[in-house]
Length: 224
Image (cartoon, rainbow, N blue to C red):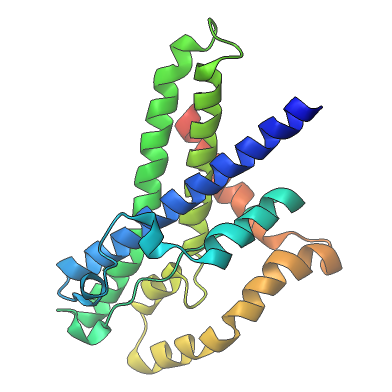
């Protein structure tokens, strides 16, 4: 039993490391996109880096995903948002959408790389059913799933998530102002979708969303 508990503990720690690394790449992509679009705010503040410590949010990157893993169910995590100044972008309307999409695109790229590495291990699994190849395959599977979750969670069109910047690209200036005015309530909206709806209404809205997005993508990447 002790060895099983130790394995579970090490697995959770490995998952947390993957969360931190995946989130760091996500935020770096935001910073790089902003830099390429003309805004160097992130670079000036030391955020144009792949160093996870520069993007780490103690609650969103460690405590929140840890609670999700321990309590079971879906997983939610975030890093410190990369600062950028929309007024410094060469094309503010398009630039904001490009900067926003860069983060989820980085998660998609990580999922693709993780799946390719996992597929490369497949020939080794039959001869090593309990060894390092299986462990590496399991870790890569979790890595892919984490990035798929980060990808689709950030694409939810609720300000300030990345998906809202894409929606705003197609709105008039007045509609954009009205749309982003709900950002003050976004925390409550997400809290209701994540925690209250499943418990009070018996309907897991976010879980259903992930089942329609994350699960098909992971299945496609792993061939099942």
